[in-house]
Amino acid sequence: MTSFRPLRRRQLFAAAALPALATASLAATPQRRSAPGVLTYESPFPADFVFGVAAASAQLEGAAFEDGKGESVWDRFSRIPGKVHNGDTPDVACDHYHRFDEDFALMASLGFKTYRLSIAWPRIYPNGDGALNQKGLDFYHRLFASMKKHGIEPWVTLFHWDLPQALEDRGGWTSRVTVDAFAKYADTVVKAFAGEVKHWITLNEIVCFTLFGYGTGGKAPGRKESAKVVNQTYHHALLCHGHGVRAVRKFGGAGAVVGLTDNCGVSVPVTETPADIAAAKAWFVDRNAQVLGAIHAGKYTANFLAHVGADAPDVRPGDFDLISLPTDFLGLNIYSGTYVRAGKNGAAYEALPHPVNYPRADSTWLRLVPQSIYWGTRFSHEVYGHQALYITENGCGYDEEPVVNGEVLDLHRRDYLRSHLREAHRVIAAGVPLKGYFLWSFIDNYEWEDGYQRRFGIVHCDFKTQVRTPKLSARYYADVIKTRKIL
Ligand code: FCB
View 1: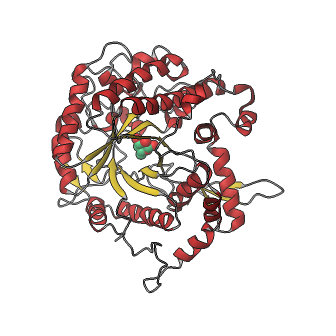
View 2: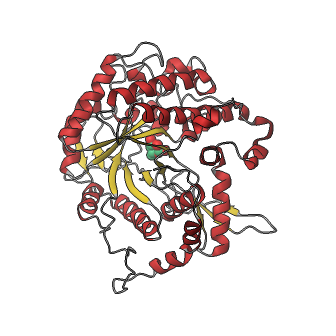
View 3: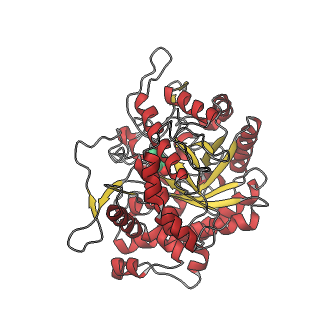
C-alpha cells in the first residue's frame, strides 16, 4: 500500500459525485433500501474496521524517574510555575508503569482489542542519543507480552511529545541534532520490537511540539521563537517522520505498516452545497500545506513558500526524499473543526469564528463539530489520495466527572462518541477508505498543560487511589464494538 498515489480519473469522478451520495445517506431511513455495497446508518461497520482506544507514555505511565528513565521536556516544563494547571506533573499519572497488566485485563474485559500507545524516548535513551537504557526496552517487552496475553494488538507511536530534556538542552527541535538522535532512536526501537509490533506511527501532531512548543510556548519546552525558527522545527519534525518510515521499512519485518498521525486543520462547509464544499476544501489545502501538503508534494509548495517568504525553513538536498517516503496509511486526530463558506469578492473561502455560545467541551478549544470527522477524512482522501485512513484520536475532555454509586454517567461523552461515529460511518458509505477509529482516551490521564483536572477517559481514574471505574461511555463503546453498530 502506498499513500501518495495520485487519484485516478475514476476516483476523481467518484469524489465529484460525493455530495450527491452524502445527501442521499443523510436522508436514509430504516425503510430505505440501499444500493448494494452502500452502508446505511443501520448497517454494521465493515468487518475489517478497527475499533481501538488510545493513550500516550507521558500521560499515563508515571514512573517518571524510575529504572533509568531520563528527564523529558514535560517533566521539566511542568515544574515551571504557572505553566501547567495546578502545577501538576506527569510523575505518577495513572501509574500504568506498574499497573499495565491490570489495565490490559480491564481493556480486554470491555472487549477493546486494539490499543494505540507511545514509547517514551527518554526511557530508551535517557540522554537522547547516548547510552541505551536496557531497562527501558525491557519494560516495553513486558508491556507487549501482557497485551498479547490479553489479546490486544499494539499500535505504537514513536514520538508523542516527550522529548529527552538532554536534547532540548542541545537545541531541541530547532536543531538537526534531534533529527540524528531520532534516527538512532527509531532504528533501535523498531529493531527491538519488530517481533511484537506491526503497526507503527512515526510522530503525533507535529504542530503541538513545534509551533506550540517553540512559537506560542503553551506546551513544552515553552519557548517563544521567531517564525523562521518555528518553521525550522517543523522541517526537522518532517525529517524525523521520514526516518521513522525508513526505520520501519528497514527493520520492521514482514507485515509492518507505518504512517504519520497529524491533527490537520479540518474545515466543515457551512452548507453541503458545491460552493461551500469547494471553499472548505480550498481552506483545507492552504491550512495543511506545511505538513501534509509538503509530504504529499515532496517539496514545499509554491503557495506555502509565498506565504512564509523569508521565514521559509532551510532545506538540504535529499531532505524531501526522506520526508516523502511512501507510507501505508494516514492517521488523523480529529476533535473539532472550523466552519467555512464561499468567499466574497473573489476570495476562495471565508472561515467563520465560533460564536461564544457555540457548544463545546470543557477544553476551550474543543468545539463540538461532529461533521469534522466526515469532512476531515473526505478532504484528506481527495487531496492526498491515501488508500487507508484512520482516526487515531477522537474524544472529549470534561472536568468534574464524579463516581456516584460506582457509576460515572457521562452521557455527554456517550453523545459525543455516537455523533462522531455516525460521521465516520457516513464517510465510509461515501466511499472514503476510513479503516479504523481510536477513541481518546482509554483512561483519564495527564492532559498536558491542563493537568489532571481535564478528563478524556472512558475509564475514570481516581488519581489519589488509582482506582479505575469504567464510565457509562466505556460500556456504550464496548457495545458498539461488540455489535459493530452505532447503537
Ligand atoms: C491531542 C493529543 C493527546 C491528548 C488529546 C486530548 O492533541 O495528541 O495527547 O492530549 O489531544
